[in-house]
Image 1 (tube, rainbow, N blue to C red):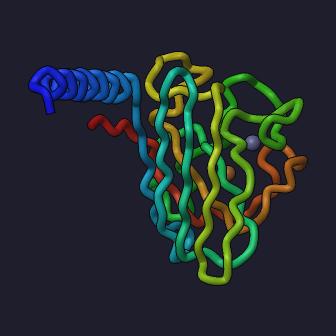
Image 2 (cartoon, protein in one colour):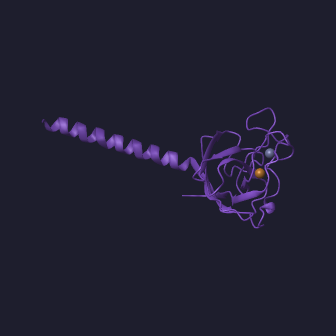
Image 3 (spheres, rainbow, N blue to C red):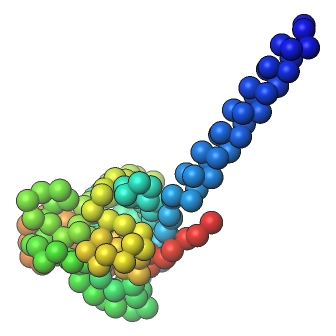
Amino acid sequence: MKITTILTITVTLGIFYLLSSFEQKRIMENTRKAEAVLMSKSGSKVSGKVSFSERDGVVTMKAMVRGASPGDHAIHIHVQGDCSAEDGSSAGGHWNPTGEDHGEWNSDSFHRGDIGNIEVGKDGEGRISRTTELWCIGCEDPKKDILGKAIIIHAGIDDFSTQPSGAAGARIGCGVIEDKRF
Ligand SMILES: [Cu+2]
Ligand SMILES: [Zn+2]
């Protein structure tokens, strides 16, 4: 191989490496992350984690629940980031910064905390994900900012119609949404 060919390949690879590390850095700097670690409430055995990441104005949520009974369980963002009460009541009502009625996610009227229902299998595990421009992580717009709120998992199903909270029953899991800087 000619020396010029080797040089050309080396320089090209070097440039690719630099560009990809710049791109990596750009993505890291433009990504914010938050997380809620779920603790059991009302005598349940629920655990799990809800992670959020925001990039270019879009928030992606991934929730994982363990130790719940098989079937659908309501999952919401509640307004107070306080899981201290044994029944989860300290988390307050649904996060509803736009003053709408309770409802199904992305319907005509819904709370910004109305994530929906998480389907739990026979093994007690369930997952749900959401991608939205309606939330942000620490942007200080009170209509969008999810930091410092609480994730609540309920014993029952959200019927999407009963006011103000979908008749979802007891609170069996709770976690505060906290900033997670890398
Ligand atoms: Cu709830
Ligand atoms: Zn609601």
